[in-house]
Image (cartoon, rainbow, N blue to C red; front, top):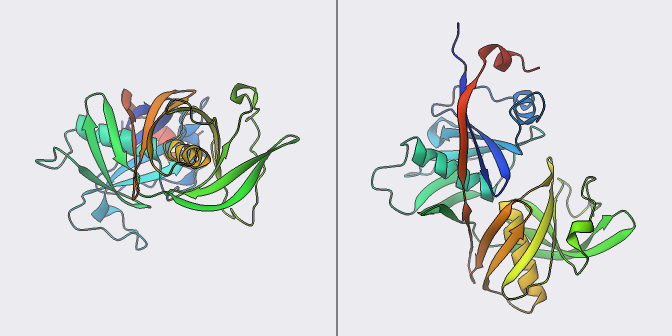
Length: 282
């Protein structure tokens, strides 16, 4: 019997991923395989797939390997599309490297990981993993639409696009089963839409609809975008803010020149995808 494809399952505050180790870049991770793996009835179930590949084996001319950075996070959304960045995904990816004994020698901190949004520095702090998400680039104001309601928001780029809407509407009452409407001219490749409460005692609550996925229990880049927007609405440019998501608590530190996401990253299970299923997902 031919060997199957190893995998791990992990999550960061309920934002869950299938981790596929492929150090030498030999697997053909097609869109069909990604969508089937992420299917919660006929696959393993996840918000996305993290392929663990050495940057030198990525073979992507658009993202040439950077000297001294061994690992690249090849992230795919549940719809099979390639995504630039995932804050919770980076933290789960780093946790997997540590578990598998794949950290570079002497890598106490930081671990440097390649992503399609650039190199990210990661620190292990007990049960938590922190990642430098880079600066949040604030764009123009815009709006999101849910049913008959319109929400004012701000475009924020964290390597992927966000529309963060600070609102006093009860978040638990929002119907995010359907993707919010948005300005397609401003976001031609789609957008993650966050709904976030105002800052109170350095804490906010957030829900998010991710492009290519739907509502998720948490979103790393979305959490950062939500905090940046909430701080700006409070007249602040920097701060350290706790975030309550449906999947758990995270913390975001916004500095003048960068942002840092802090939170748990958990590995749940390990296994093997059957070779026959991998050859023809069904």
